[in-house]
Each structure stands twice: as C-alpha cells, then as structure tokens.
Image 1: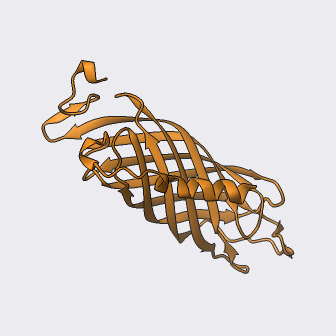
Image 2 (image 1 turned 60 degrees about the vertical axis):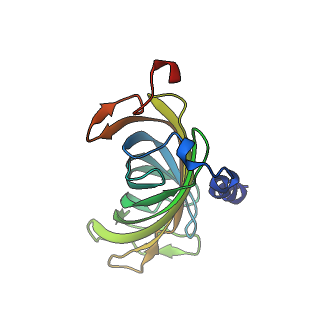
Length: 211
C-alpha cells in the first residue's frame, strides 16, 4: 500500500497539462519556506523514521528554483531501530512544470549529507543481528531525487506535498548500513516576494482585488 501511495505522489506533478507559463502564480523572486513533521521509510532495513523537516526555496526564474532541505531525526519505530542520530541536509535545483494558475508541480535533484551514528551495543537489520558500533558521529554523502507540488492559496501561505528518495551508506567500524529511504512531507508553508525592487507578501503587479 505504501509503495502505491509513493508512486502516486511522485507521478502527481505530471498530471498538469497546461502550457501557458506566463499566467502561473509562481515566478521569479518568490521565496517560500516551511517546517513540518516528516516521515521516512527505509527501503533496506525496514521501520519508520520520524523527522522535524523544513526547506527554504527561491525561484530564480518562473520554472527554476534552488532549494535547501533539512531533516532532524526524532526517532524510529517499527521492525528496526538502528540509528541514534540520523540528521540530513540537501541542496539542489527544482524544475517547475508550467501551469496556468496557482498549482505548481515540480521535480528536482538534491545532493546532500547525513550526520549519523549507530546505536550501541547491538543493532538489527531485516536480515540479521550486527555487532554494535563504538564509532562516533560520522558524516556521509547522499544523493536524492524529489517530486511534489505547491498550491498557492493566497498571498501569505500555500499547501505543499513532496516525496524524496535518497540513497547512500553509513560508514563506521562495522559493516556499512544502507541509508536508502523514501521521505514524505506535507502541510502548510509560507512565502514572500523578494526582488531587487520589491519586497512584500503581494506578488508584483497585483493589487488587493487580485488576492
């Protein structure tokens, strides 16, 4: 069931077929931000991870933006509970598929890093028990691809949903442990317009009657 939900969310941005990009709400100078609870499903070791997640994004053009994400690890539940720490950060670019209005689907890639540490003395994967690690906190690279959408409800806030798939490995004094994971976040986010000649909640060129 989870796989079907993730597949639907990843494909959702491609369900918009409008071509008139000049009528879209999202445009150059839009700065958006959010902070919410996110969940992650490791694809190799099972269980569910809980994060305090957030992102900050700036639109360089109407269809290109740069975005940084951060996930603070709160804990795990389910079949395994491997990590004591598992915080991650990402920075990359998004391509926003042209639409006619306030719906803003996108896809993107984000290289990143993970600050991770295994629990001690013993951890368990879906295959077997592993000897515990005495290794301190380590930093390892990640690569991720993501897809999602924003819906700009008014000039102050918008709804968002995105799915991120990451791949990487945790290295320590025992066998490497995969960090492959699907992360999903949704909720309410905020934005402001920030251009050289315009800093306000209302989009440049719009008036009160357009809100």
